[in-house]
Image (cartoon, rainbow, N blue to C red; front, side, top):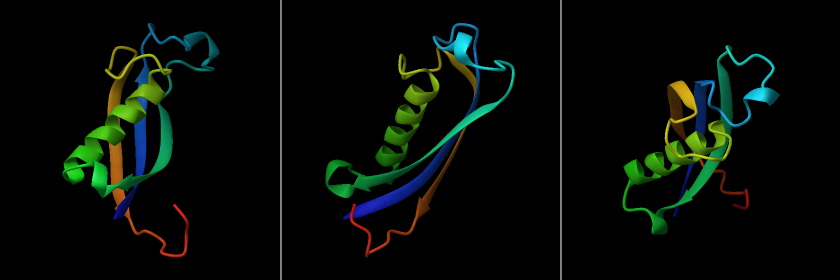
Length: 90
């Protein structure tokens, strides 16, 4: 079975962010949104899925260099389960 989630990470970058020179305004709040299709065969429960999504979004926000909050601050996650479309191939 598959579960789908719409997830948004909102954050600010620290001066140590590896891509700081490419960010137009490092003081502004940034965000990244993605949709995840999670296969329940690989996770014990929904909490594990949410934690996986948080780690993945943190990696994206950190410039691909760190799963922790070494390069980002003021982090907020908004993760919501969404209905799967039975006609959509996933």
